[in-house]
Image (cartoon, rainbow, N blue to C red; front, side, top):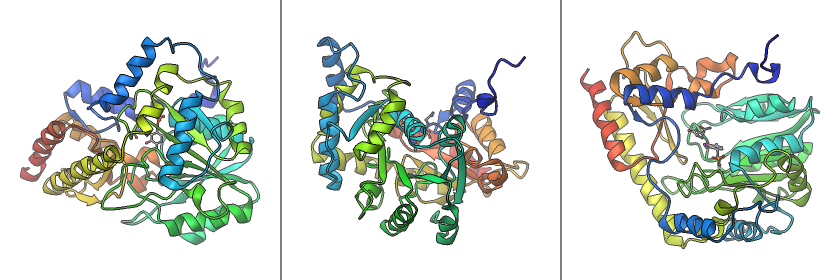
Length: 391
Ligand code: PMP
Ligand code: GLN
């Protein structure tokens, strides 16, 4: 008898674990997983230490600490003019990952369809499979990763329960425009479909791109659950402190699932949320400037190495077409990522993992590099990548 359930048997190991292991094995500069190799702002780290030393070490309320919920509501008002009741419309989750999973479990029924844009962040579809929900894919295509409006409109049907929108987008770095989000908003309202948004890269934007919160578009407050987290903005991806915000009806449903998955999130880390989100405007502008410089520097290095670069507007990532920079024996993105890691000493992510089986060819010529690394790390990667140009 197989010990593994049929539910998880098809999942395999996440590509992030595989690439991390390969990078370690070969001593490669790891531009694979989107995790900073530098630390959080000192004020945020100090707040965590203070919390541990103040006996904030027992269970927090399941819905989240009041101070953290209030800070999340103030942040939504400060950046997006979104009015939230901190008592009923904010739920703290174990990172955005658990927020998304609890959202799917709390807001869909087995047999429903949920629309996702492809390439799709790796956890959503396994979440849906565990929930008994069918993913319905809509392709992002071309240099700007746009979707075909007719294709999206056709994807909505009587079984559609929700649509997931991740902006800024992993892995492409696409930032959905206001016009695109307005089109999605119209379809959601026309069909009574919930939008679940993953906005973890909301503060990592390039070239003056603006992040639009779908929940703030006309009529969307009641239809949108917004998920985000501390991880990316404050360089604490290991903390797993996230949130899901939206109307009470949706947040209550998500909490029904959350209370039996994690119950409550690490108290001393939740206790830092107010300190983090309430850092002054300088923190947010410096973060953008820092990432802009890192992205620009990596774009130049990748171009010098011979890659065709698909310029991101946001997120931790740059997607490239590797075909001009790799030996002809390399046939696909997985081979490319393995070869780059083992022979050149730079690890990246093969993007075909963000596609369903029948669409994997769409990611075969691509590679994803993370830019959330110290300048020394990016310099070491650039030096190694330059070997491709000389080869
Ligand atoms: N969503 C997206 C699109 C991501 O890129 C990530 C980052 N790894 C997550 C969710 C996970 O966020 P968290 O660490 O807060 O669970
Ligand atoms: N979101 C991170 C990335 O895309 C990885 C998170 C994880 O390992 N699950 O690199």
